[in-house]
Length: 317
Image 1 (cartoon, rainbow, N blue to C red):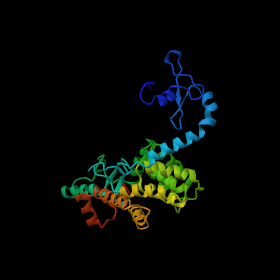
Image 2 (cartoon, one colour):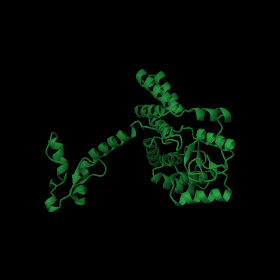
Image 3 (cartoon, rainbow, N blue to C red):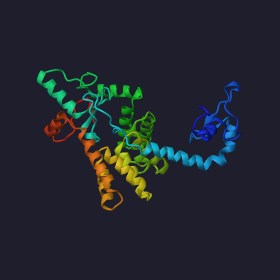
Image 4 (cartoon, helix red, strand yellow):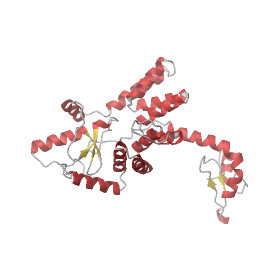
């Protein structure tokens, strides 16, 4: 970073060690490293960082919290569900409207699955996965073999699915192991489930309550665009009596199409916590998010199956 320019004082701070004041100099191999937490100061050595810590601690903590909030309260461009691999339209945040293929662990909307099945039946074709084209009608052993291969390949979807199944069976140690591994690979749904487990907000979980881990995992999921995690964060903030933060979470989740969050925004408007402009903006964004997930194929699937999840042998929802 150059020490010349408009913000000379800030530049000088970043070009010198915050503790001893030595300047960065490539000729004598002095390389300054940023504070890992706040990135606002630099140090020439670990010793200098430790020596300066008492003076820097309060400012560092505040700056790190501000940086975290900048990321946390940014409106995600889309939900954690992403787009259907076939029609490229955003997935609904209702998990029942998409299916996870056992063969390739790709998430496909039920509209595409339904129309592919109709085509195969009409043309009397062998049923195949709409994405990877492996045969759809797998035996239990074939499905398990393919699924285990995806786990061995560290596929986040497969790891999460296994973690969820272990939890439903009461094996919480294994459930945490698989979910943690998937979360470390960036899987938002795994972060959400871990947050709910650490908050004792799931009926089948007996994991000890840990508020710090609950908040961390819910925040990571929310940052990745998980509206339900955002809703839970809003509830956590209400419980902590921090309504300003709760309202922000509810508005962001509602804008991603989350229905319960929209109800909370409406309630906030009725009680004067949410302004008329905020309510109107959230309502428009909420409807736009829902409309973006609609298509004629998905609508026809809804009508033909009454909204029930489409399942084939070899498919997991």
